[in-house]
Image 1 (cartoon, helix red, strand yellow):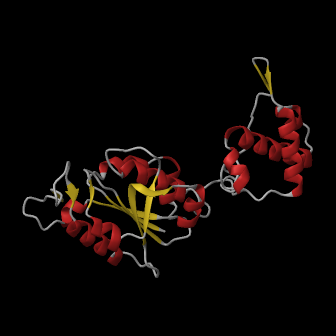
Image 2: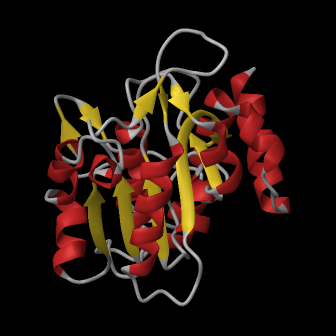
Length: 247
């Protein structure tokens, strides 16, 4: 996978790409990336990338020319056999989910557009991008933080990026439910003990306990996910136990 990020502030993303799992994955050639300052593509003699909105109103609007040209340049620089997914980070976009992360992780080329100011010229939205993504119902000063969230969640799903191949499939939301609780050594910390079942060595019972705890946590915190998840007969039995214990 190759990732391009169009931004007026590339330094905001440098640290992310040079840290932790993303840096290790890049060093192992699991993906490549470029940070593109689309101000470099403006034809305006003052290097402006924004202008006043037609019809009046508050704020400045990003102009289409530098962004269109930057995207066209990014597309030419890769050897991808497929058209890239061009992602506009935008509070009006679809709410970001783990399912979307899994979908994007299958792509060869992702281009992120990070805006600032009041918004984008609508022609960018209508004629250039393939996806509009929002990471929540709130407003940030720019799209960089949102792009960082999406990129991190996508890169960790690439093959062999995580050390344990089971880590990603068992994440919260990957199964449709919230993840079960985790414990590690010591077995007793300040009088707080690890559930005995996890020390039993009985893997079948441990898996059942984990599934029930996953259902329990989801039922307590995100009941909407229960309705959206295809539960097995065993799941329904465990869920009934959880519901009866909650009464």
